[in-house]
Image (spheres, rainbow, N blue to C red):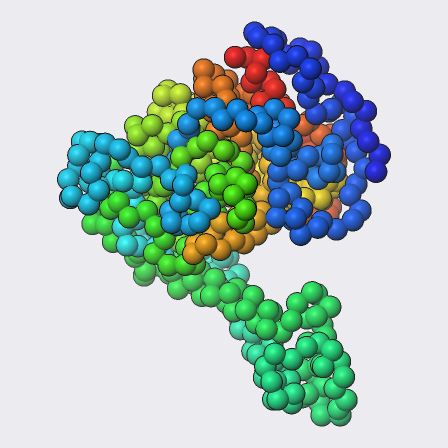
Length: 534
């Protein structure tokens, strides 16, 4: 399910990493051996830095980005490379967005809107990808589906019931809490607007109020508290109302055992029942923004004077609408991966995940199919603050740590603040099952209707790495998918600094223990290493 100065000495990568089969003389990697002596950035990020921090460079900017801008300015320059198709398996994508409309994949073997499967791939009028959800969007969580089935023989039924009980109690408590907060803020806003005779009052006007009326005094105090946190009552109202909507969706749809969002008419337990859904890959409503945001991180048109720059500059986004507002179905994911592979994608991004997966083998087989066909699958590690070496998170590429794929990359999330708080508090981690970390907190990217927002999640970290994979495949198309994965892992910055894990200040670990590589992804170094392998 989807859901944010002292220079380092100039040192190069260890020579053993650079086994040359060609030459790119005079190019030095980002220094790494003394990276932990990098000073902490003590000033707040500028607006420009906030909107682009994931592309900045730890050495130059003391911000733990992926050195994307440095890669373009020093390595890529005017070298466009080969076109790479990147499949985004996600919610709907606004393919008409001003920053995406020129990078959307088009199936040239399909004649638009003629109601025929012109290319005989099993999908009618799949012009820009496929929509496995049809008109649906809201869905249950997987463990709720297990309970709804009534199949007590399911080996995880008792676990599903326990999870449901605790989650339902949690979210009903949150509903009570946030309904109360929303009412308090609404009352304060209405009281101040009534007293001042206008809705667009300022904090200066609020501070000037002198009164002994307890209701008005309380409203003033609430406005001052909200302002101290950098917001206005109007902004707080919008934010709280958004949270209330999410809480209600969780209770009314995700945790509702009597709700069924499936509208496609297929047999969800029959993998051979295909062709359901349609070719409309767009969101069904503006709030369905996740896929558009992910697509922008990978491929928003670079340097066009509009909101955001994608990581990769020569890609086409294949839109595959698969992830609802709830847990994705294993069948949809398995078929989506196979669709992407069969229709020419060289990189797949999967910013979704769940802890229960009844048909995990279907998805695992599809991940192996991608690997066997030289396709990289990049997957978000998840936002549960958990160690996924010990707690399940699907999809995965292994059974008891025996991997079926050598092209699967699982990505954890970083914040923009280098140091002990560098790992996003929500990010999952795992020395065996997470491969690398990348920027994922407050990542600025595209959302529907030509708008832009900062959003946080490992969902935002994965497409950053997918973008690097696409860059490498574009510049060095002769490298295999397995080589590209290894380049990304080997070329990252290995940090040994100790960090807070899961947002728990009492849980401090060396960053090197949180993933298989112990590194943060770095586009600049990855391209250098790739150049040595070509």
